[in-house]
Length: 190
Image 1 (tube, rainbow, N blue to C red):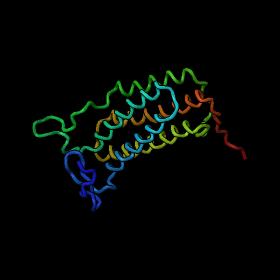
Image 2 (cartoon, rainbow, N blue to C red):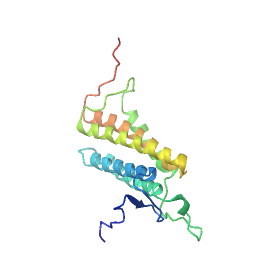
Image 3 (cartoon, rainbow, N blue to C red):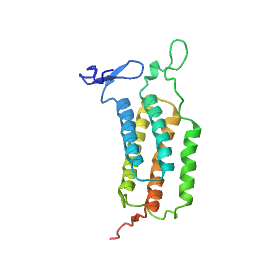
Image 4 (cartoon, one colour):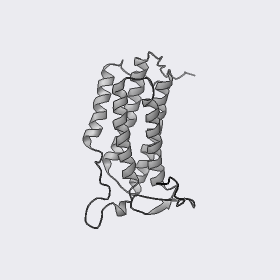
């Protein structure tokens, strides 16, 4: 299989279902940003962190491929003529969202309460989490805009929202695990 097809040389690409759209279409921006997020999660997974975090990140990466596939599917061609769904994969479930919530609850129980915003940084691994969180928020904003135009499964959007929260809590937990300095943001007074 060749990687290059030359079909996108004029600035268009195909959605799942065959519809061609401009490469700058919000649908492409949405799933492209999810792909970017997935790459950042791979970078976090490559750090010297506990295997439990790595294992969950692999599961999250799998779920992000599903989110990307949902976003890449032409809604007008999502259902085949025989009534079956074109996208024949396990969708994002309430259990996927609950898993992130449970992981956050577990990590939060081991952390001091938040009293202020924290400045991103303190350790390279923590910074990677904050970058991934920001990319996740961008993916969520783009997916939300797309959903306003062409609605898709709500669990996919909810998953992105919860994942950005998870990445913030993971950054805090890794700060604690790595004994990194967590700097509180305290606004200067005039």
